[in-house]
Amino acid sequence: MTLSPPPERLDAIVQRHAVITDMLAAGPDSETVVALSRELSELDDVVAAIRAWRAAQENLAGIEALIADPATDGEMRALAYDEREEAEAAAEAAARALQLMLIPKDAADEGSAILEVRAGTGGDEAALFAGDLFRMYSRYAEIHGWRVSVMSVSEGAVGGYKEIVAEIVGRGVFARLKFESGVHRVQRVPETEGGGRIHTSAATVAVLPEAESVDLDLDETDLRIDTMRSGGAGGQHVNKTESAVRITHVPSGIAVVVQDERSQHKNKARALQLLRAKLYDLERTRADAARAADRKAQVGSGDRSERIRTYNFPQGRVTDHRIGLTLYKLDAVLAGEALDEVVDALVAEHQAALLAEQQG
Image: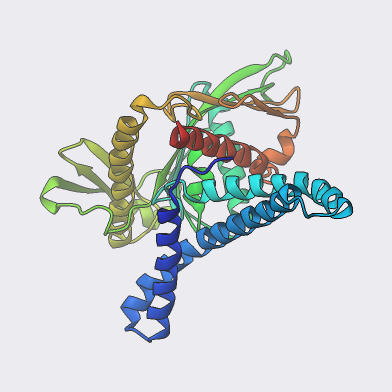
């Protein structure tokens, strides 16, 4: 595998890693330590991959030199021939690993995310399915050691959710969940269906990168803030106070409502957090669309109107339509236990597309 980055770029990365290490050893102020440590952690794996690739290249070159040298005796030459295939495979693997490391990182990947699940077509059954999906993501988050905090919820008439919005906090949340955005379809026999007929319903999932204040500044003059009484379950205290908050971003028309907390102040803070995430996502989507104009290979458009996955209960099957992956592990996927198998395949396909774009 031929690496496209010039040696000068690899040298510059290794040199920068050494410079940061020396600067940290000199004992800078705490603010500088945080910034340098973050950069160093990002470079550590890249530098390790560069060194591994160079070592593999040197090993292969040494074997080739032995084979080419007329002075090499027959026994040594035979041994070199035996080792060459393994050395070539190791060099190829090291080159691919390094190439993946050099792919430009999504700035939001390491951060937390806002998860929105909404019932789509299918009435009560769609709300129940939205509940299934939210439980799946909650269990998946628990497996990964992430924290889930509900921001807003509207329950279905017979269970599940018409809509639920939650914050998932942890390292690398967005990187693992960003491909979940889209329409999820379920095929199963509802408990209320006496004839045993299979019904199809759907729910929409949106995963938004959580925006920090440094990512996006909100101009307060662009905001309209309204308070209202919280609706739905929540007890007498919630319904008697105007604790729910709706914030509208006038220029874009985007509005958010948060009513989960009893404190109006807390609801306002969470509503601003959610609005910031939506506006940040809007800007990212515009930028992604511009970058993807000439892209030949994608993991799907990422459009949330796109049907991305089907959960078929009679067959115990989960199919991701973007990559043609089918797993007969429906229960394990919905329990969050086998969801990584789907996510890993999507990430691998995305990386392959980026590699093709980088090399093309």
